[in-house]
Length: 139
Length: 220
Image 1 (spheres, rainbow over the protein chains, first blue to last red):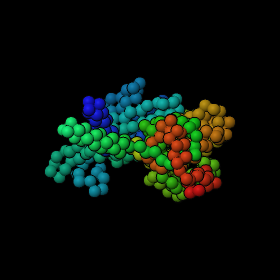
Image 2: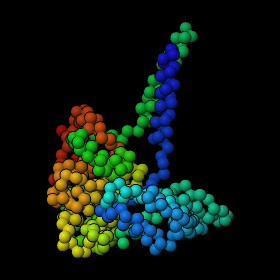
Image 3: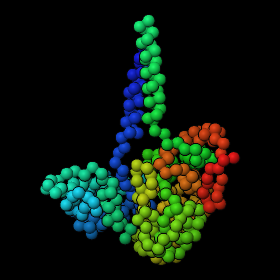
Image 4: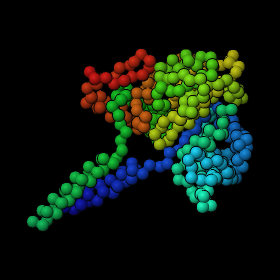
């Protein structure tokens, strides 16, 4: 009886853990990979692209591979219920090989509603995509 | 009597929780790619899925490609044998090639983006140096990156950092074929081979190459 109870308790805990993993999906996140360009040059390109896009840096740590920006105003997507969007970015740039760099961007978007309130936007994937597309690193 | 009922009750609960556990544990296994060996899966994990928590990174096919007239681009895609559709403007989701200045002393660069949640490729831009005199096989090498080859090999072949001897090794060829035989969203692990072999035994189907590098399942 004790064994059955123990097994039941164990499986319930394990079961809820597994269910949580498959049921609650993290927000989709874009990963950018740059192959065949030395990591050093990627870092310089990113800094140049941010400047070109008039996105001011808050701080940058080249050794750790982090860049955080000041908030910038951007245009709402068609159909967005917001008058304005304010976004802040935190980039993570990791060199996995001397010629391979992976980059992700955590976007923190806020939307200004018609009631003049700034609200946090939870669905960030399209903002991440737009950020990477606007960086135009390949140019 | 009461004790017996309790036992029955908890036995039922145990059975339900077992079902619950296995129904929630995700999976992502697939019968596709069952003809590949363990080393193929290991290589695919090392040079693709390992960069995305085990979820394979690949395109929805046919892939939209704008070559922008880059010499050797169509031949490179034919070499890899993955279905593509050539378009004349830069696709929102697809691969774009261009001639430009990829970087100091660099023959070519590939910028690719994918969705972490399901591993679907979103865009890839390949920039090839305008002066290709000292660069050989660059387009084929970069196209392989754009198709999903992450990192580089060290076997002296095409996917070495400097392109090696230009030969496509069996490991790389098998990896690309296996990658595009698995459905988008498939999760693999380096030990996938055991599972796939078991499924192959159970299955009454075989893998048939279509001549273009793709493999498909057909009933025996």
